[in-house]
Image (cartoon, rainbow, N blue to C red; front, top):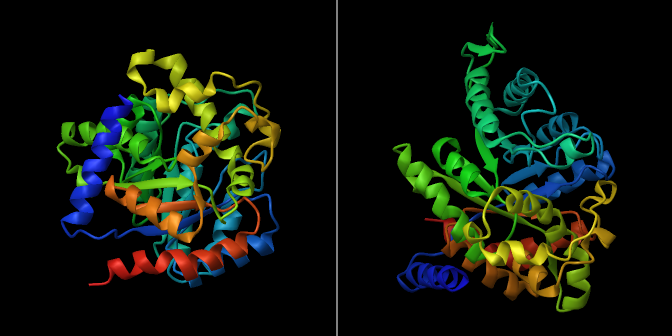
Length: 358
């Protein structure tokens, strides 16, 4: 399995770059709302000024600040940046509330809102609840689209319509398993994949493409996001410790996959690293140097994240573009966030922004 994934990634890399197709890619940031409101606004402004086209925010309302007032402030302080949740879920709030929030923010922002949604992890588990099923997620996406377009839906058996809503937001679905990825291929505008491993992304996209074709869609019209933390430095030892929390976050989803699928249905590159995982404390979720990440090896950190100097980041971004990634989303929460944006603006982004120009 791993050899096949590597071969496919290498082949696509060769075809894209040696046959003259450059690495056009969009860039975004995701903020964890545990920092001050002033910094959230400041980092969003800085990111837009630096060339980032997307601004996302985590939604875990118990652990961190409520995202929707913050998205309002982010919209008020930007002009072009597209904004959204990365990610919400259908169960934390009644879906009519989520749809109304997005429809309102879409009017306020001039149509710049995009919904990132998944089955629910920290926002559900801290309340002692399980994530929703992939079928519930699919139904929620369809209802969200209708509600935010001003169409009538049957919500819990009651005819419901947001008569004032206008244009629906694009929907990005986050997931890892074959079933949810196949579903996402049927209904999503974009896919959110929380790692920067080209081979694993290629494996995930095989199910997305199957789902798209089954629904009569062109898979090339589906956006693909790779979301991961970065650390730009020649000191790999320091960098790894700043981002080691991220594969630990991913492990929560991997544990779900292991319970749902046979071992042969999942690549060892995704599942084998969790075998020594202990208890995961959500009170230290996404926290730099958290004990949650003690089981994560350097090899996994290097695959899932972006480390090294600026040239190393550009190289891996080209590899991600080669397997179809259209947006790289920095989980901007490892410390020195302003410096990271400055470094990316100066040393990383120019190659990719230039490639998008006609």
